[in-house]
Image (cartoon, rainbow over the protein chains, first blue to last red):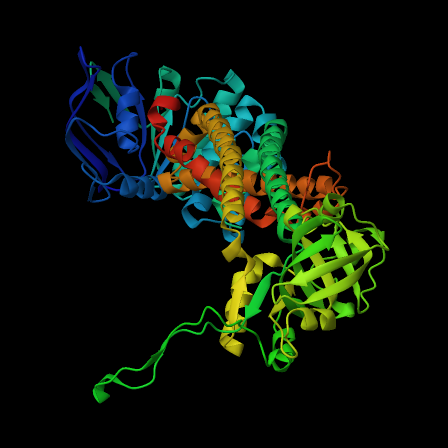
Amino acid sequence: MIVDTPLLIVTDLVKEFNDGETSTTVLNGLSLSLYRGELVALLGPSGSGKSTLLSILGTLMRPTSGRFEMLGFNLIGARDVDLTEFRNQHIGFVFQAHNLLPDFTALENVMFPAATRKGRETSVDRRRATELLDKVGLADRRDFPASKLSGGQKQRVAVARALMNSPDLVLADEPTGNLDRESARRVMDLLIDLNGTDGTTFLISTHDETIAGQCRREIRLLDGRLARERH
Amino acid sequence: MTYSFKVALRYLASNRAQTALLIAGVAVGVYIFVFMSALIGGLAVLLLNRTVGNIAHVTIQAPDRDPVSLYGRDSGTLVAILKSVQQRTTLQSAAAFLPTIEAIPNVTSVAGVVAGNGFLTKGEAIAPVIVTGVEPDQVSAIANVAGNLVAGSGDLTIGKALIGSGLAKTMGLRVGQRVSIRSERNIDATLLIGGVFSLGVSSVDDGAIYVHLRTARVLFELPDGVSRLEVKLDDLRLAPDVARRIANTTGLKSIPWTEKNEQLLNGLVAQARSGDVIKGFALVTIVIGVASALLLSTYRRQSEIGIMRAMGATRRFVVGVFMIQGGLIGLAGGLLGAGLGYLSLLPFPLPEATSSTGLPIAIGEGAYGTAILLTFIGAIFAAIWPASAASRVDPVKVIGP
């Protein structure tokens, strides 16, 4: 269910990278809004600014200028510790490379966002993580070390981890990029299903037009600007 | 268990070989620390025992006859008694203080002695001597004379004398011979040499004679009282404290051995300092070892640190994970090194029983607790830099979205 209230608004977003000699503008006055419950595909050629946008929306990177508000909070100029707390509670990540902690089990990986916030693993979180693993079809793999899981299984654990703290926004960067066709289909089906049932907003960066076609909205970037949008 | 503790433990457990090597490295440093402490401590014990083990640890004398005012200034006339240097200071009521002094903790024996100077004569040979008169049952109360006899017996009946081996050699004396002695009071006596002792302290062996207390009373014209009380302690390092306590309790002048052996004390302090330097280097090695290993770990785990940060782990959490790793390595290495140190020192004899070629090891001086504590603190200190580096890892650079 899509709610009319914007989850986040970015206005005139600019991001420049300066290596001392040359300056590169990756985002060049980008403005967009995302709404609660949306399933959005972020498209664009390499270098168009997709990853930089995801990093800024994920509060992992600060823009050079512009406005960025989410859930009514102005995130520009917020302290690092506040951004970390905000990220932990409101944003989930699914990376192209699953990025699980290899020395931890599937269950421990899923619980990580909650445990690091509370400073301990609670039984409530253990139950929630187990439910999420069940939801992504990996209940029988909960005690497997992450390093022993297949690529598709790792990515599904990563999806479960992204949902652990019931975030308002999940940012997925090429979530099926490293998977075979069958695993990619399962992961996409899972994201679409979770979007439909939980109402979590998903912004999925992809080069795959088929995946983009499964999303209800497409945002295309070109040279750091919004090139085209489909609703 | 806090979550950062769990993550730290998991990291240490995930690379067991590296962790074991790291702990072993720390343990070696701690072992050196413990060994050096025991060796330096043993050397000190050996030196002290050989140099001051056979002298009184505290000597109690009568208070000085300091000049005193007999009338106040208000009277207009000041009458004073000058300090006497001609009269002997003797403890007339020494016996009354004995129970009090013997009851003071760490005091093992107290002996009243009548002592003075004299000249020993045998034929044409004359030698200055220090005569000490003691009760026969107290002849070894301070110096272990009976235990260090090289000839004769330790029986100290009236008319007999026990003489030092150096003196015996110089004068050509043997057990069973008779010698003449003239005291500082010009009283002569003839003594039978009953035994010859060698304490290993030349000042004693070359010029000391032990005689029966009553013989000494005659020689020095001291029908009652004693020249001084000599006190032996179970731990001679406590002498200044015990002397203070005796002085406070009895009002008598109490002199610890440390006051008369400043050079020896300075030497011991210098020796302890050089030991501290070596132990300091061992600690620095530990700190560098832990810091470099943890720094390598932060580089190796950069992507995982990035993942954690992206998942909402604070910088403080990351710092905690690496600091805890440092602390655990320090604690484990400290316990292992101190334990191995203790076990390896067990076979060594006490410093007093060490042969001239052996190492004087005092197992009780190993400073095990200090070694563990300092290593623990040092390892945490060593983890600060790696932990700080880990907390500054930029998630975007190491994992990106």
